[in-house]
Picture: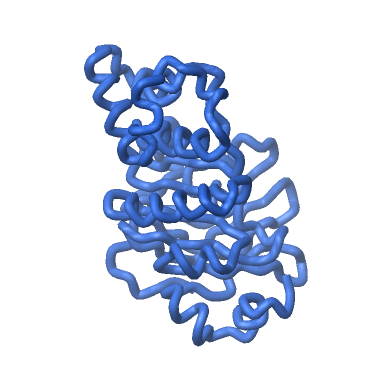
Length: 259
C-alpha cells in the first residue's frame, strides 16, 4: 500500500525479506516522500527495524538473509549499487549511542576520511558543519580532542547524528533514537529532526505513539500476519493515520487496545 506522493525519495515494491526459509517481511510496497519525517510504528516483533535496515542493506550482515522485490532510492534499485556508496547516501543512527573510542573530532571526521578526504582544514570545516547541523557545536567546540565516550548519553547521540551527517547523506534512518534518553534530551532530538528534514529525508522507528504523532509527517503501521511475517497495514499522512485511520487494526493499536 503506497501513497500518491509524487516526490518519493525511497520506495519499496513487493519487498520481502527472509531469514533462511522464514519470511520476516511480506510484500511491502511504500513510497516515502523526500524532505519529510516518516515514522514506522507497530507492535514489537513486527519487523519495523528489519524494514528500516533494508534501506541501507544492513540486513545483509546477517547470514542467510535473502530478499525479493525492489528497494529504490531516487528510482534506482539499491541492490544494484555499491554498498559502501549506498551507505554514504543513506546514514543510520541507532537506538543506543555508539561513538567510536576516539576524540569528538575523529568521530565526526571518520566517514570523510574513509571516503578519501585528508586535508585537515577541509576536515575541520566538515566537523564544524556537522556538529552545527546536529545542534551540539556550541557544547563541544572547545573540547574537540576530548574522548567521545566522556560525553553524556544525549550528547553521544547528537555526536552520532553529526557523524552520520558528515558524509552528506540524502536519507537518515533512525532506529528509536530517543529510547535511551531522558525527556529533555528526547525533546531536543525531536526538535533536531524537524530542523534536519529541511535538508534530508528521515525515516524513524519508534514505539512511542506520542513521538510519532509529534514529529512525523507520514506514518507507516506494521503488524505480523498469521505466519509471523511483518507486513504494512496502512500508510499515510500522520494526521490522518492518528485521527481517521482506514483500517480498524490501526485504530486499535493507536488507541492502546493491543500492542
